[in-house]
Length: 416
Length: 127
Image 1 (tube, rainbow over the protein chains, first blue to last red):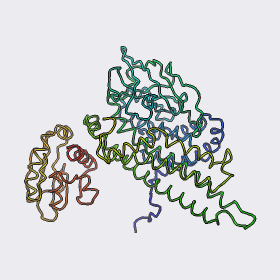
Image 2 (cartoon, rainbow over the protein chains, first blue to last red):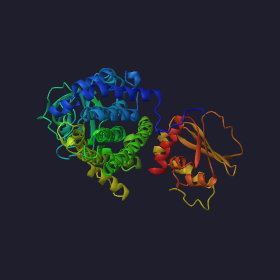
Image 3 (tube, chains in turn cyan, yellow):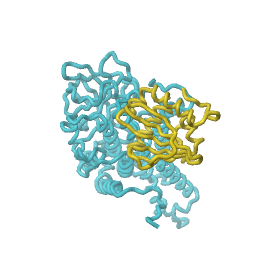
Image 4 (spheres, rainbow over the protein chains, first blue to last red):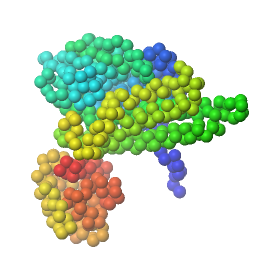
């Protein structure tokens, strides 16, 4: 027999294993240590993000020739899951940063790589994706805000309603219409450095969960950026977002919620094994209802997790195909003509599957832990609040299901 | 239009129809710009072999061959039952689906497999 049997079902290669162990180490030593304070104070997890940068994790998704780690979506999903088990807020900031990278790779010119992307690859910059707008909510195919060309610059006037890492990011990836007369989905994409004048975060983020991720509104108040900061060609933004951002965004989002659910599940298992009732002198683990709930949590996590990993591998394959279309200048028209490709629908299923699973699992974890977990500061209490965020994050589970349903029923997608 | 009357039409006729369809599709022609290849269709159950010659961003020739050097340079080799190949090239069976179904095998470089996948998207899915 040439090699070991793989009864784990998921065999990482040596490099993927290295990134997983690196993420586990940073999560254990840094993220876990700061997670409770980040949650309690609703403070941005600076120390944790800095640690991710120093470990090379912030640059892992960019090409090695740029100075990055050269890793794909699958590896980033494995890493995101590990981070989310320790600190969901940090994981979400990392995930949104990661979601900007495939698009930057796909669109960057050699000059853009040299002038502003190499620091990102070296882990010295955190990115944010500023998408949702007050007018259209989580229907991200419709943008009201726009940029106007003035000489060699664009003047961007855009109010984004929820932006993870707002005010703390080193750069923002910003989809807007690149002219006031364009259609809502004729989007252009801008890389906006975080120190650009007139970037104005609005208020403070005081969420129920994910309290450290700074997801407050942000106003790009007539920000001036040089034309060299436009990523890709004008009006091709939606196609490039569909091809290069949506898959990693949905896979990574699911990985965050798998990690949150795992944290609650592991804390619950630990609790019920240690908590002994004096009348029976037996642990909670001996209660049949507890056994059933623990099993249900495990089943739910495993089903979603395996699907997330499978689809993230599909997403990496899709990137190869999209690159083929891009190299022949066909990407934009193929994406526009193919709005309900089965691949996108399959990726979309991850969002409600993982987010609803996290709500179910964290709720059951609280049920088996009882009052101990209901108290402020318990891991399960935090996971319960963090786990509730996914379902309403854009695109909300309800919007996502409508997209899936219209595809199944052969109806046109809302952005066509 | 696809010739989907494959039950009464042989693979040879289906391929002639496919050639016309391919060359009428501007996206397919754009996609194979600079991709000059011989695509060998190898019907494993009947022994029939056809070569599709892609050259100068068009499907230049479809010809039946008695034999073909399977180690030839720039060769993409598709193998499957003749009925499966007929279904594929009459448009009823997406080759990308056929591949994951185990209905055909492809012997080529990874780069060429990606090109075939892209062609499958253009010709079979988008039409």
